[in-house]
Length: 191
Image 1 (cartoon, rainbow, N blue to C red):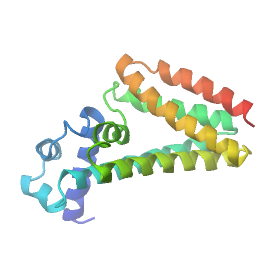
Image 2 (image 1 turned 90 degrees about the horizontal axis):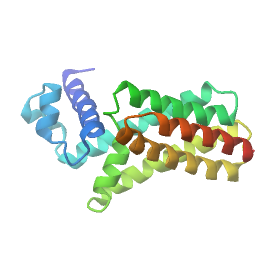
Image 3 (image 1 turned 90 degrees about the vertical axis):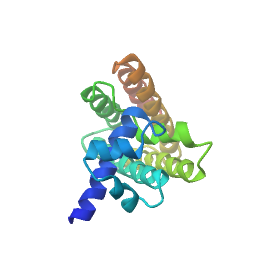
């Protein structure tokens, strides 16, 4: 990877960390170049579309991380229930490792920007659709019927993103434990 690509990649990674920690609105380009130790002018060079362009890159990076997490949880599971419970557990572990400081960048952007940026709203909506599609497909791999897998996948994504908010507020993984239990039960009931 060249120096130019490395600088841009560092800025996206730094932007992701900052948005996960502080939210989109509270993250400035100054924060990004300070955290990533990159020159001020490089922000404008790499993101000529401004903060919204960086926001789209942050959303995409976080989206890819969640899709990977979904597939890893499924690959490590032997049933629909263990898959959904394992997914909740994996997100809880990530949250605990950050001492409840790092939330979901997609969720932060969706909450803060959906009313003021159609571009960012569409990007976050696309992430939620992709996560739901991935969970539904993996549930079907565990013989959950397609129509039921779709409902359960939507409930899963909704419950997990809600648990992120509550866990950060409580500084506890308990919301994930409870969501994992409910999702396991639902997976068994919907088969």
